[in-house]
Image (tube, rainbow, N blue to C red; front, side, top):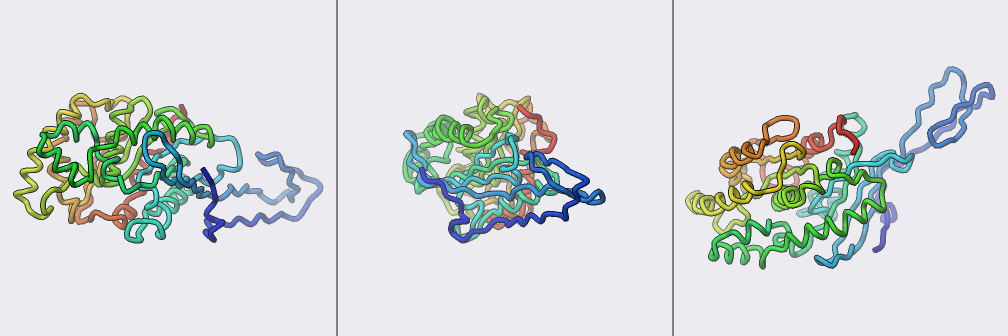
Length: 339
């Protein structure tokens, strides 16, 4: 695996110029790195944190899935000390930080959002691990247990739509058994479940929810943005009658899965949302119908469980960028306890 800062490509995140104050031999102050600064008695010294960093890892290898790229965001101040950080494992990683690699040239602006939220004291600083998708995206993000629970004919239809059977169990093993250990040994992380989260949109929202349910002792929360409850769209998504028939097929599969899932309201944080325009217009019936199932698991709207609707918001990166700060605030409140 080869790591390289995008600064090598001319991508400049932040430049910090340190200006030394005029020396006054009468006063000496030590900063947290042990550097001695001579300052005047009337001057206040403010230590400027190191800028955030983007790190690229090319072709991270796995025995479970095909190799893929990673983009890792380190928060401001990471280089300054020994603090350990929570981690969000974020799907569709090429869509998060730079428009040149993102779908349709639009990116989420996660780096800008994180930098602003940290600077404003709204969230706890965290490491973001952007996991790039591959041509097998639908198969890796589609919940395998639900796929295998579909009736035979419907399962065949979903497999045709996805390009094959579900591979999400192997994808989650890649994250849990290979990627997370690498991140925890390479960077200063807090490896416990209470500080480890999943996040994504659409099918990325599905795999985030599924990952939390399948590995409840590894992850402490998930943000499922524009949760793609239908699994696949085997009809014209504007055809209301066809959408209703598919809803009646898929909903019981979700209900059966959630009844025995590993979700635990006493220790898990869960964010779900959707818009109401274009593809997101398919999601409200599922979200409403599954509210009793989440309630049966003990989830109550509040600090650790949120379902939010964005009227007229469509299904794309521009819409997700517009609201990305909200799930980040939810997952990373400044009151998060260290684990």
